[in-house]
Image 1 (cartoon, rainbow, N blue to C red):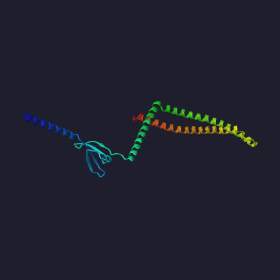
Image 2 (cartoon, rainbow, N blue to C red):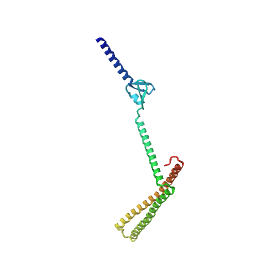
Image 3 (cartoon, helix red, strand yellow):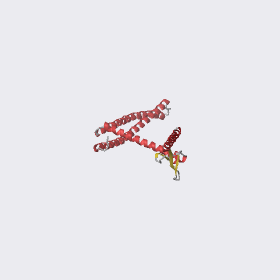
Image 4 (tube, helix red, strand yellow):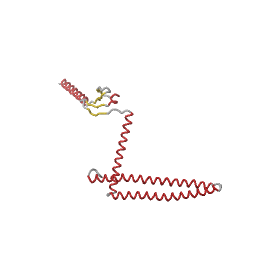
Length: 217
């Protein structure tokens, strides 16, 4: 009887160990990859060749658990990062355009509302141009008067005082600044006209999409 118990215990222990081994074997993971020549390889550890060419993680039944792409070269990594940045910038631009479209349509329910705003915007710039022209004319006249005084002194062979030379230099700076401001305002007027034209065309396209039910906001 005692011998029977020992044998039974030994058999049970062996069966348990065998089951554990079978379970471990069933859950074993291997790596599979093709080398540069296209030859297939299996291993329970990764090699540099596998990392360079990409590999599959497979279980003991040969089923692919996951595929891992090959490592990128430094040059490829730079290119990938550049493409990712460009894609992110493109998506950001699209999102910003979508928000601007939504805001524009919400702010101006009718085209006449948008056109009225655009006219007011141009009128404001035009008023600044008119004011700057008048100021420039005044400053140019002041410079002309100073130059005339200096010229009269030179004709009578008298020295031009330092304070007058300094005022002339300062006034030239004022005139130059006014001229530069006028040029900027005039360019701003032209740029605003172009922007408003594009804005109005965009508005009309959005309104058409809304009327047709094709994705307007």
